[in-house]
Length: 393
Image (cartoon, rainbow, N blue to C red; front, side):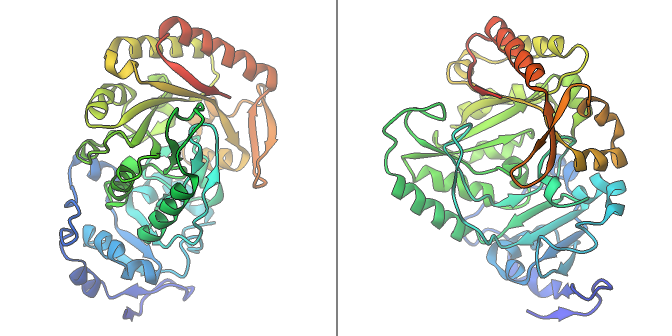
């Protein structure tokens, strides 16, 4: 693959031969994949001006497909999707936090393919096909590792991920003991560090996952989302993919869930996704303690009971997750969205919690958290008795 001069000053990057790659990419139809959509929802989230790509990722079929999707974007070579000098670790990017998410895309190859045990929302955490998100939720844990920028990184070596998953599912065999994740199938969370509904605006990675799990009768895919993407309704998951709509009181979401679909829209979409063949669950997450928080959740639960049809309620389950925040993310947010920190950063209610990776996290104090979980459980029992709570922490 030819490179042209003109990369950034540090010499670590350069421009690819864009015309060659776009010509090679074709229309996206040669392998039976769906044509890309270019509707209002996609344009609102993504106006990609720059694609940073590892050479192997750019040369792959999926990489060429994505590059063709954004023909006006400047294509820049990078040695590693984790180490892009003027993007990651650049404090100046805080001021353009949302703009970076809209205008920048990263392509890389996934290097690790391990499947990790979970036991909460899923039996297993699968190796994801993306990292980062075009949305900008102020409490998101993913940017803590990236440093001042968190655009979507798309992994293009899809076949290796699916091959590894297939081997793991085959080795696990049938699920013989029901648990909170599922009574019959092994559940694999395929979107731990991204949002698969948004990823579908960029490539067929999510479609490939849904199609793969249709072939695996002992397993289900699962991912959480805050974005209503009607294109997912066409994928025919046949009950083998669980979509978990994350919800919180709309007044909290308006301040904290930046660039996401409104909460009422997420609830209104639940029946459509169920009818399209998805299993539909909910994440009550994160629960943020602030003045009037119980009234906010009471109103939301009432709305869920009013809006959701019986067929959704009959198969629904939920996870309750109290807010965990982070010192470094707090400082980042102060640079672009300080009003969010009025809700998220509460030293009077929080205590330090060192993460497994050494992060300086904070969570609600033990007594405060236990009392809030119990209050929310009582509200759920009163307003949505049909909603089975898988776990609350």
